[in-house]
Length: 88
Image (tube, rainbow, N blue to C red; front, side):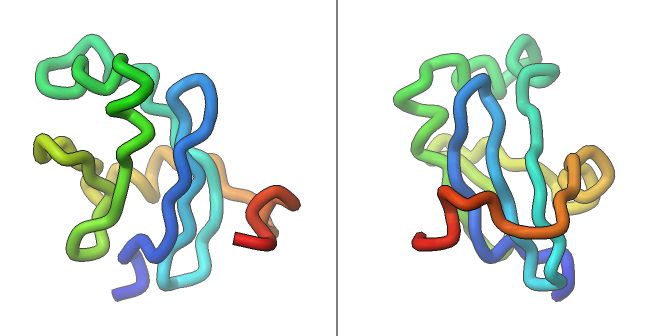
């Protein structure tokens, strides 16, 4: 589906870089979520860096996830991939 995440990279300051199957690219800030329930575990930067993709959604090992509609609604979109990700 067009909203499925095809690439995710952890960044500094509790942000992630994402690319979707539909071609959207951008940054998502998880800072507002860190004081809420299961997302507080993401404060551990080593754990935060374990971000991955499961069934097209951004996820972490202990089942935290970002709903695709939330990701798309709150993502700061960009037109092209940042230079540091071109070779990945």
